[in-house]
Length: 90
Image (cartoon, rainbow, N blue to C red; front, side, top):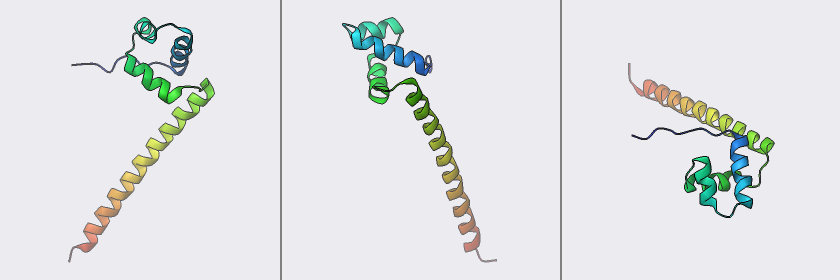
């Protein structure tokens, strides 16, 4: 069973991406930092060209979006429950 692995901070991710820009081999950079090539390419797709403040803002917006999605889901469940309750004949 695989674990979740190590969590990298925004600074660490940017450091790896910057290092890969000047490195000969991306695989060497990945090996040095203990990440897979897939993880590197996912990071580059998501965070490429960003600076630390933009990265933090993105994470903040993602957290806010997740919170809003949970609220909407709860509201939909409440509405469905009320509809079911009101549809019953007493």
